[in-house]
Image (spheres, rainbow, N blue to C red):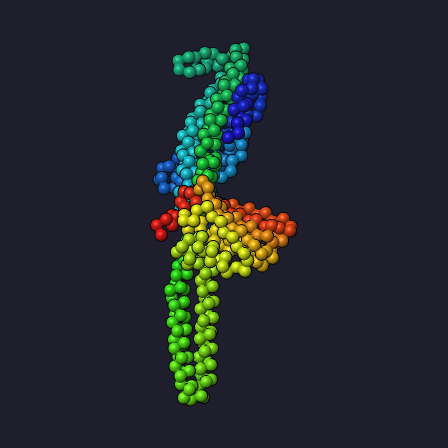
Length: 427
């Protein structure tokens, strides 16, 4: 927290401090504290249920009020709640540590507000008494009772010591008010300010949520792939086999009755359409989530992918057997798939080299092609989407593609972070 200017003002020589604006600003601050303390009494009396909500209001007030006496402007310590989360605003706020710190600030304001009210009351009584004594002397002689049994006669000739006494009292009260105001503002700055620990916790929570979301997407993709593979694809296979049997039977009948040849042609055409539909579905299923990736791992999936690409592909991997978390393998697979598609469609490459490397909890895949280069994120080649995939898992993506080539694109994904998906060692 930036050193508050009010504390610095207290270190000045008395004549500079007492003639500055700080005693008056402190007095104004304490008057506000006293009023706030009085207003907070019914809040506490009504019940603790509304204390957190009242604390939110107090926190917002204190972050602005502290600027009156030279404290640095403070941002809100609360997470931003989007439009879609507005119905859950209260539950979100109640789970934040900042809300309960602001509730503590409310209690601090209550206690110190009552103290400020008491101090201001006695200050007002003392100054009023001195004023009345001086008035009694100016209009005297007047028999005056000072305090307790102390009495005396005030006259126009002996009232003047009230002046230096009042000035001395004002100096003491200036320091007292400033110390009280600075103390309360310092406490509220600690309680109501955003904390790096809270910010780090929210970032960590967001990172885990994004990773969990990616994992849930991949689980759903695998479920769809299984449903299509075990359901529709098997039905198409059965349909193709049934049409093949019908075609064989009709072919035997055409030897007896040649008029059945058009029917045979129709059945053969239907069988061809069924086989085409099965091939299309197979490609679709592979695009959703290749079953070989789930069953045999990234290495086998990349080998199958390389066989379908009209390029010479060289695969290099440090460890042939280690399995990595589901999200890491899946994102690495789609990264390589997109890189290979770009090499075929846009780079005019003939050779691609894929290297996999794992070191200190980071899995890195590098794809290098001998194409013409010049790739960038703005040309719509899907690189921006790959970067989003990497950042979702707290990873990085690096692209190096000078004009004339070669193009090298690398993705690095951590797989030992907290909350990671389990590795596939049990498969």
